[in-house]
Length: 145
Length: 418
Image (cartoon, helix red, strand yellow):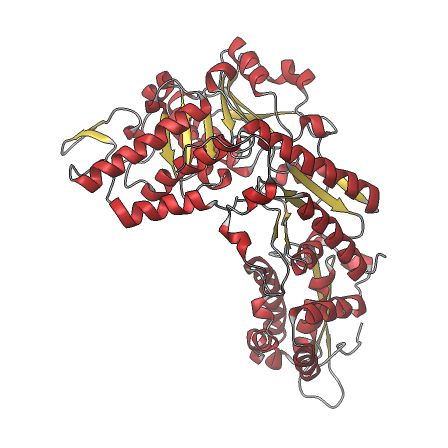
């Protein structure tokens, strides 16, 4: 489970700009959702469940210290039973996964969602769910920092 | 409002034309396919106009001013009260209390009646199809009074298991709280029978009419209903106003729920005495324009006639169920057959998460609700975390049903199930 994220933030921004409207962007999110690395069934347990989401979301983190790096890296894997949420998870992983705890704590994920225009298409419920995941990731980073 | 009687033949396109919200297409050019009336109904022009009329022509606080605007507001409010009385066939307008909605109405009864009359060992008879608004207030008052909540079991097809009633409706039962129509299953409950059986053991009955009152006639005296609650916004009226009907003898014995202005007879420095009904339960400023426009909503529904509404909604249901069952693999419709069902279809589709479905239907301009619909105990019983609900109103057409089914095909395609 140490695969690099499916896509980088820069690629996401380019893709979303090129697609232009929600129809295409939503299809792209679903595509990302299908490509997302899935969790093994044994990881889908209560302690890994992220609360606040309408769909089920499970999230695990692994730490890794590359030989050439001062700081550890946090590798995140997460999965939902809803495909569009899996697409949103792919965006979160682009922002956070494989980064150091200090990079995670500095990242402006809200700014990136706004830049992608997703803030217009996320209901307040889904936003809460999404930020439930963000909170979990930041807590993991804060502990590891 | 015109007093011209409307023909009973139901022309859905004409009726749709009375709802300004459908006049404009969505930004992606698609028409609005609004299938979330069970959550809140759209408003006809007569309701919007009535609310505007109040603000533009005679707005003032209610039951306070002798000046002309104040008098007109009082007159309009009492006219609505009379329309509500007539709609549910209550005996007197003093039995009609304006509230903020069904949730407040049920909380009012649980608090004002329950706190005074529930005793340790008493039972409140609920069932798992109830909305949280008809469960949680009872849990709270049970905790405070030493009473307990008990549940009538449901049948496999989502109806009250009346065979089991003898086991759970006993001398201990103080009140039965039941929905007239489930907001998820669409189940229409046998309220009259429950009221009759309740009377035999001395139990009262509260009917949550949030879903049933907009869709079918109700006669509180004939049915033996002690308390009836409903919301303005689900019967094509404004949001923010609701109704509590309570039998006069019961309301008279109950303590106030909220206290403050208007609900008093006399306030001394140390104590107060209460106003007559219904003012005793209407503390503070009412939702004035909303309550006035609720009268226009009741006129609107009456002019269509419940017979015609029922026949129309039945046609929509039949067409929807026929197409969905025929065309959509893995389609499950929760709840009973058509003869026990109002205009609601809550579904699960094999391999489709309700959240994905709702987002993809939205892209086709089809507005449905997904989630637990404030009925977690029911979803626990069904064994699903969420359902997707399509609910119908007078403005829906067979074309809406076709757009729903087509949008479900689209969603399954996008989710790679085709």
